[in-house]
Image 1 (cartoon, rainbow, N blue to C red):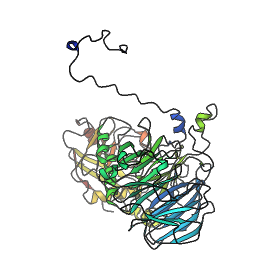
Image 2 (image 1 turned 180 degrees about the vertical axis):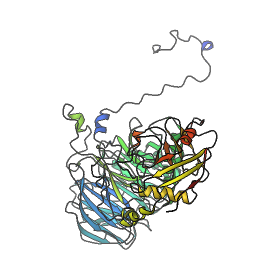
Image 3 (image 1 turned 30 degrees about the vertical axis):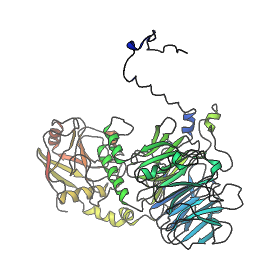
Image 4 (image 1 turned 135 degrees about the vertical axis):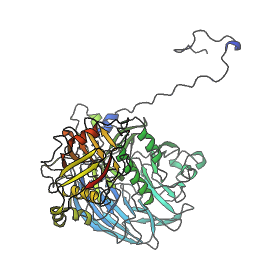
Length: 620
């Protein structure tokens, strides 16, 4: 049967071979991606704030975070401490603190119903907790070092089965957490290498496990055999389950979607892979390698671009993470509808629509002082109902848009003693500066304590109140404010005394705005403080960008000061409470204006170098 001609095709059919076009035909049109129905309603049930709303402290670096369906947040740190936090209608509150292990917590698992959680460590013990009563209910002594732990029972099961793998052998052991015995119910060697990661899929009552070589296996938690009735393949060669081995990488973390149809895997090669559970086929691969991040930075997409100095710093942190074996493993989690994948990257926390394959939003992009790694999502109590395919906001379109629950993303960050909470609310700006979003519920680490101690304050009395910058275009006399911003002035004057600024160029000059210097690399990406780390902002109500010739610290976001500073040539009130004002030009305004007028390239770098020759600091 002959088809009717389509738009753009000839009305006259081809009558013989001589008239036919020889060669390949035109490429078929790309099929338009079907939009996700109720996408906005799903997004309204997810955190959306650009900045984290609150953070709370642990005594040491936080390495594990989890959310219980019983409305509890559970967090663990490298010193073996475990904390329980109760979810309130808005925010969380501290509930209980345990010293779970003497060494680092190596694994944290929460049961599907949210009633039980367990921790494992190198001390060959498993601690089991009753979450709702926040009490340690049992401890299992193991004759081996555990590698991974996972709860493998459904709500209503008689036995609370807990699967634990042996780090140094092939065995997987199943224990009854309520049985009171140290002996496993059943044990079996499932893999040819030690099991590294296990995740339970309650919808199909199947455990997915991955060994050290990257081989993926499915097995039943009751028989430890392959669940033929739950999957749509018989041979793994019909699937993509060898993908990890083919790519010569391993598995860092694994997460299963609430509907049981998908699971995600993160790997050291910085790729996030999403598989269909029943067919074992690969659905999506997201490349978050540093090379891709650099390509995005060079692109014109504003959603992915960062300031050059900020991007350089984030790249350096990510390279350090790769070298740090004890860093928390980043994971990729699903929302309750299983339509969105959420994971932390160098850029921030991405929320990706799996159907349209597009980034829906990025959380925490402005939080350039924190590299988020492991995350857990709270969207309300799922223990008493099935996963909602259409969220409340879509089902009740005429009602208030405010969600019935308080969707919250729980995060930990690289080398940080804190847990971070992203919600749908931006952090409030309290009138009292001491009551900010970072709650000091523990004694601060020594370096933070020194910053606020009286000893640190006493040193401000001997700080210089003026310096002279000798530049290739003349001298600039600057008045400093050590009482209002002691740490900034101490950093600046110490660098001046040590010759740190000698022969540095003014690398960024913008007419009608400012001149910037203080970067040893000369491109805006370098420089560090005298303490070798970034230090906090020091805002004072009497020091504002309300006039030209204001001396202020350059940064890449809150509390990221190093060595770079700039001098304004006009009033710039939009910079207030973003950059620390620590000085004013007292003499040499004409020199500043002369530098401002030099010719620059498209990147605002002067064609002819203008340098700081040296700095004169009076003896205190």
